[in-house]
Length: 299
Image 1 (cartoon, rainbow, N blue to C red):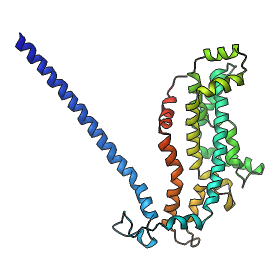
Image 2: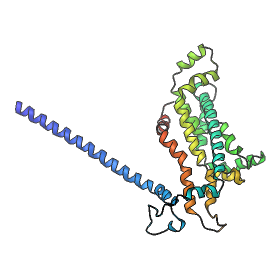
Image 3: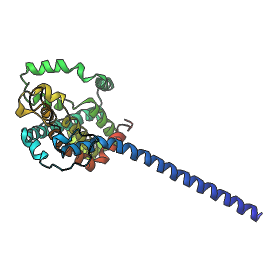
């Protein structure tokens, strides 16, 4: 009996050990696949940096040289000085900062109304708001442009800023509404006992409790506005008002309408332009992940 029990125990240990090694092998294979795909995704980024440090004549050599010889650091100051790149950066910072502020304020106010206030037709209005997410942006492109033209806002940054103060976007409202709905209603009752108005509940209770969700909306809005090309291209006509996304396009054909594209300058400017989003991603990774989690919270 003792021999039988010890043999069964040994068999169980072998099975557990086999399962442990299977899990380790599975994790190793998964990490290997992820590493391979990461390397593939990094190739364009590596080519951009490599090209930004090459001389123009070495850009299209075959086989390609991943490590430039010689390394030409002068491409960066030349690329940033051949066009008013500093002005583009200031314009981008102004438009993005104003848009992020408007989006966070307006979307949080609308989401507060949908999540915490009770009024007739609330659910219907929320469904209509969600339905607007199904409309492609090109459907409203021409009517919105005509509206801003009649207002005299074309060739000003107003069309890129003002709409963010009127709702902040259906997705942001939905995300914040889901988060606000997860905050216990008892906190509202306690606030009303202390004499808080609806705006007082929003400002003193909901906003402090929702700092992470508001940060997520701010980051997503920043990424969208920073990389926006179509909006500035449509509404801004003066070179001194262009943003970085539009300014990069001017490196194409600098020698004339049908001239050559200075790819080494273009890649140098692109590398500099990538720095702010990369810094935000590395320092705010958890907010990107929370943004995915929050959208799944039951309202």
